[in-house]
Image 1 (cartoon, rainbow, N blue to C red):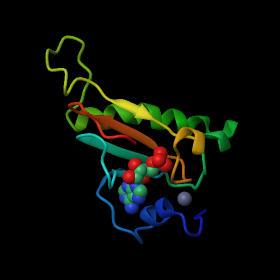
Image 2 (image 1 turned 60 degrees about the vertical axis):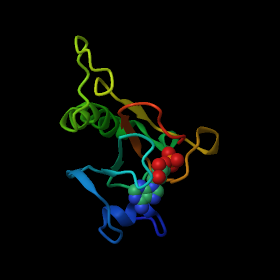
Image 3 (image 1 turned 135 degrees about the vertical axis):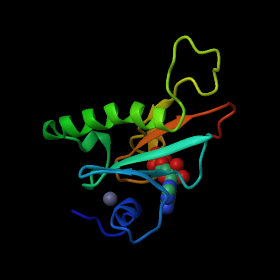
Length: 124
Ligand code: AMP
Ligand code: ZN
């Protein structure tokens, strides 16, 4: 279910290039084109869902999968949370899902931001 003029649907379809770091049957993950932090990934479901508010009970597994995948990818990229580590800069990550204009959403295809690295981060 591709939405016309949806930039993330076009990235998923390979019509627009992206720096992809992960893909499976349900989600694609690529680098944000305008990174706000040293690590800034976007995880998008292959199926076009406009916002978190549009998610339905049948999307529960997808949303759970996305949340469980985020720490794995962050760790792969060098940002595993280690409570004992003295290195703060690589020690953990942030996930963000903006919803609607009030939440700062600019692209209306559901996406999870995964951010990590030394401060300061840019506004997003
Ligand atoms: P949001 O404001 O939550 O909707 O986030 C949209 C994000 O998509 C922003 O961080 C943009 O930098 C990013 N973005 C927009 N176009 C592209 C693109 N072609 N490739 C990668 N990231 C993009
Ligand atoms: Zn889309």
